[in-house]
Every structure is written in C-alpha cells, then in structure tokens.
Image (cartoon, rainbow, N blue to C red; front, top):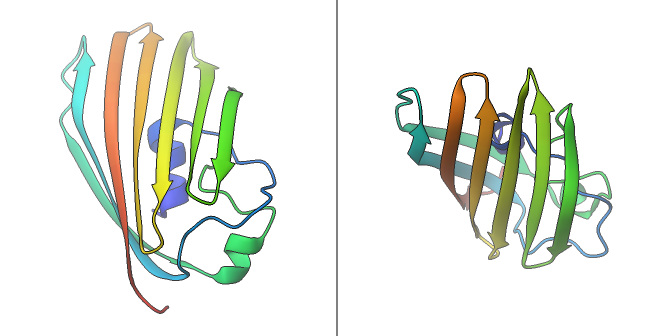
Length: 142
C-alpha cells in the first residue's frame, strides 16, 4: 500500500488543493513507516505498524494534482495549510452512523518526512481515539 493510500485508509483524509510551491521533499525511493500505538476504544484494537515503499518523482512533486493526502468519500475538509515545509489539516468524515474528526500534521525535511495524525471517532461500536506517527526516509534513486 503506498504512503498516500495508507493515509487515506488510516486517516480518511482528503486531497490537497493546488499548491504554489513544491514541498521540500527530495525525489527518489521513499520508505514510510506508520505506527498506530495509542488507541483508546470500547473494543480492543491492537497496535499496528505498516511499512511501505514508493517512488516520488520531481514531476509528481511539481504537479498541481500531487498531494500527500488521498481523497475519501463522505469527508469534508475543514482547514488546510500547505507550504514547502509541511502541511496541517483538519477534517470530518461521516459514514455508517458514525463521525470522525481528523487532525493531521506533516513536516517535510528534504530527505525525511515526519508527521502525526489524530482521529477521534464516534460510531455505533462506541468511541475511539487513535494516534498515528508517520516517518518517511528517502532511500536513494528510483
């Protein structure tokens, strides 16, 4: 699963709008590790770690269509700010009788990316709070 798809699945997030400047991300092969280690819920949910690799080209970084956040149905973007050094966003997703509030932040540091995604959800299965840490590292050329 690619980093962008992982974020969609883990955080139910939306795409970035066209950006004025490219993110401070060096093109190449990247490895992303996401760790969801803090889950507070009415049901037991084990910690999860996902590792994915992805090639990111300069053309993708320069494209107005490129985003680190994937579109997800039934979500509404409340706020987003993106610049060369990172992005922050907040959104709300509603589906199947439940609602999730998502707050995310990513920091772009050339050959490293780090970020946090916090989700607070209410569903027919009960309340849940989930914190995910994401770290990306450029491994080399594609």
